[in-house]
Length: 74
Image (cartoon, helix red, strand yellow):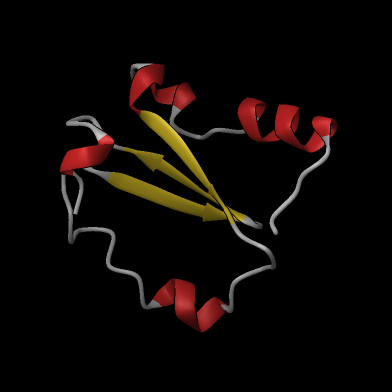
């Protein structure tokens, strides 16, 4: 089970890097990881694979911006 405290949830919402670029918040999602991912695993992720979707791994969260909707992302 993946859990976060209320303070951690608030921090995740405040720290969403895509909010700073002015995107529609309805297109933003967060995936919660149980533990920190390995650096080499994160480095192997291809950020250009699913444009216009974008992601950023930060700590135990993966921030997603899916402008065409989550159901249409690759």
